[in-house]
Image 1 (cartoon, rainbow, N blue to C red):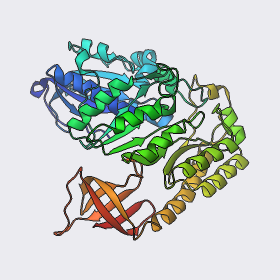
Image 2: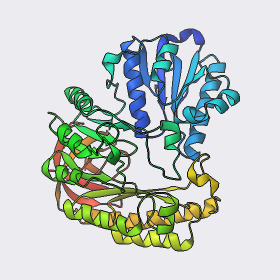
Image 3: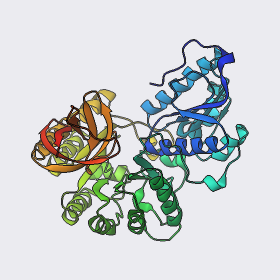
Image 4: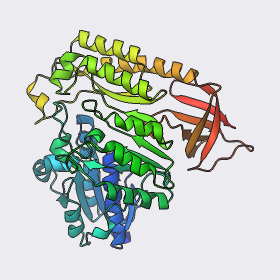
Length: 444
C-alpha cells in the first residue's frame, strides 16, 4: 500500500516537488523512471513513492490489466484525492494503463484529479507541468530499482490477438526501439553501475518485425552482450508462437546472457489455447519446451498460466495440472481469469466461479511448490555465482542467474562477523539448505 501524508499544512509544501507513485508491471516502472528523468532535467525535485510529506504534486502511474489491479489503482487515486481535499497536496495527475483505457469514465467519476493522461502522453504531462520534453534525454531514467539492475524495455505495445488480454487497448500496437538506440541506453546504464539488464516487452519475440521486417531479438541480445559492464542479460515475456530459436544460440555463445527464459504459456488444453487465440497447440508447446531445454541444457524456464478462463472444464484444468507436473517448470506463476471488456473473450460467458478459479490456481501452485522444493534440494552442495540485491534482517539476499528479482527464488546468506558482501556485487555461494522457494548458503 502507498503511505499517505498524515497531518500536515499546505504551507509546508515545497514547490515543484513531485511524488511519482507506480502501480502494476515492470513496463510501468520504466515509464515512471523516464518521466522522473525528464522532470529532474527540468529542475523538479522528484521522488518515487516518497515517504516525506512535503511534495505539492503527485503523479500516479496506474495499472488496468485485471480487476484487482484496476481496483488498486482506483483506491490509490481516491486516497490522494482525499489528501488534495485536505490541502496535503496541490496537484494530482493520473497516467498509465487505467487512464488510457478509461479516461472518459474517470474524468466523470473522479473529477477532482487535475488531469488524466494515457500511456504515450509523456510530452503532454511535461507540458502541463510547464516542463520541456528534452529529446536529448530519450532513454535517460531515474532508476527506482537498486542501481545494479534495471528493467530494459525494447518495445512498446503488442500486435498479438490473445482473447483474454487488454494490453493492446492500453499500450497500442507493437513498436520496436532501434538496436543502436538500445545499445546506447545500455551503455548509459552500465556507466552508472548497472550490471544486469532485464529485457522486457509485451512480446520480446516480435522484436524487429516492424522496423527490420524480420525477428531481430537474437542480434539485439548479441549486441547488448558486448556492452562493457553488463554481466547479466535476462529475457522476459517471450511468446511461444514463432519463437526465434537463434536466441538460444546467443545464450549458449555469450556467458553474460543468463540461461533463463520467461515465456508465459497461459494454458495447455487445445480447447483453451484455441479460444485464447494463442496461435499454438498442446503438442507444439510441449515440443517447444523440449527443444529449448535440449538446446540450452540447464536453462531455467519461467511461465505464467491462467485459471478459470471461460469454458474451462474440470478436464481442461486436470490436463493443465498433469502437464505442470510432467514439465517441471523451474518457476511458475498463475492468475485467475479476469473478464475484461472490449477483449475477444468478453463476448464469452464468464462461467467459472471465482471460488473455483481460486481453487484451480491454488492446486497448480501446490504442484509447483513441490516441484520447486525438489529442484532446490538438488542444488544442495553446489556452488553458484550470486548477485546480492539487499540485506534483510540477519541475511544478505541475492539471486542466481536462474532467478529474476521480486518473482523468483532467492539465495540467503547469514550475515555474521565473518561474512560480508557488498550489495550489487557478485559472490560465490555454496548451498547448504533449501526450502520450497529459497536457497540458503555460505560464501565460498
